[in-house]
Image 1 (cartoon, helix red, strand yellow):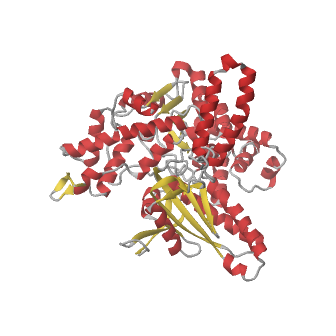
Image 2 (cartoon, rainbow, N blue to C red):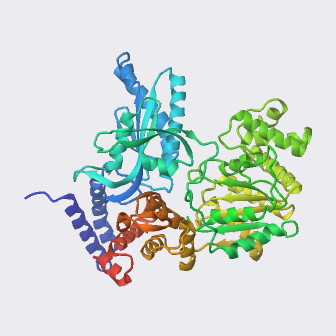
Image 3 (cartoon, rainbow, N blue to C red):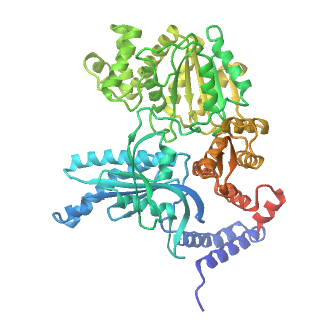
Length: 619
């Protein structure tokens, strides 16, 4: 008789255990426990043996699923030449040490090393765990890997190099292999293109595919190369070489050439303007804006800042490049969190501090040093008051200090340094606000790090003493460390807190936004319906669906001028990759049973009775 398959053995053991448990009242606890104990142990061993060999221990289901993923192929050059001169064991040891150096740069951005192929690394950003900015994460990781390899070469006296192929697209992700041995992997044309890009690149080059470029162009410097013919591609492929992070990164949102006035947020804007109008007299100077991605939080902030500086004047040389100028109203500065920043100590405060001194984070140390010195001397002079602020802010910025400034910080332990960071930031903000009413916007605090959160909570009482305004912008993520800023503001201000939760636009406002963006009074109804259906009141989704329709030729400008017409592709539109990433990032955080329910519901259709879903799930 043939042996039973593992799945059949597991099913039989589960049925036996369930049957014994049902008889517990009749047989007694001792007998049932003695009988089921060995069976449960055997069941656990069978399940472990049947699990995929290299599948993640937690995360998404291992059924195949379509995902927007950024794939990185990184090839280390130089090992072949070394192997001719060194013992194979030495080469192997050195290769492993090199991988140990490079892999953390991938993990810092929540990437996953999919496999090692000789001296090549294949990494995924967006699978198994999706993030809304996986292309950006992949490119930042590649740049960091280049820097880490330089350090490795200096340390080991080697001359190794790296070259990359990075591409974004929809893949099938899940377990691949035989019934007895499987591993998590991705398949699709996007993977093939990434591999071809790596093959085409030379040492020191990071080649990026068109979709990755499109989603990251505002953030990074690229060199546009001549399209090249790649194996398996009928037409030449556009190639972009990644150079560096831009000194002043732009926004990845918005439609170039298409603009609209803000719609549907008049109530919120008027309440916020009341805060800045009365900033000198009203002691309640904290605002909280909550909303899901794409609902217009950043746009609302931009309108508020623009409306509260009615007569701007050219800012002095120290003014923040991120701080929106100076005038009769409020002087604004902004600190922004990054999605991979919860593990980066003080990253929110560092971003704010760069804004306060008027240099971007990518500025050279000499420029940062000079700007910090200029601002602190302007506010505190050159005596003892300066030394109570400048050394500690310089240390926070990781600047190389000298003389008395170095003496102030070199003997302090981490707790003492944190206390001095707090004291110096408090003095700096107080001095700025006493000179001119000051507004601080802390954006995306759902990604804030715990150390910045802790200090900001202690800085918040300053808003009662001087014309200083705090505004916290966040998604409704109550589990994030940064949510403590919201709860603290609520506890300290109660009903005096200016707080809004943004909701999707209603149909009237959504239609108005579409009309404004496309600058038409009579958009064809079939096009309008497609945009509204897919966007569901989310302004960012409206913009991205319009962008996709234009890029794919689904809507075209009229030949005679103003207006738009439907193209041939209008019936075949899909959700854009960047929106897929945003949605999948939220889905991947759900428990497995909830994700399964969502997956089944998506197959049933857009609208259905709950009973239908219940019937399908119980089968």
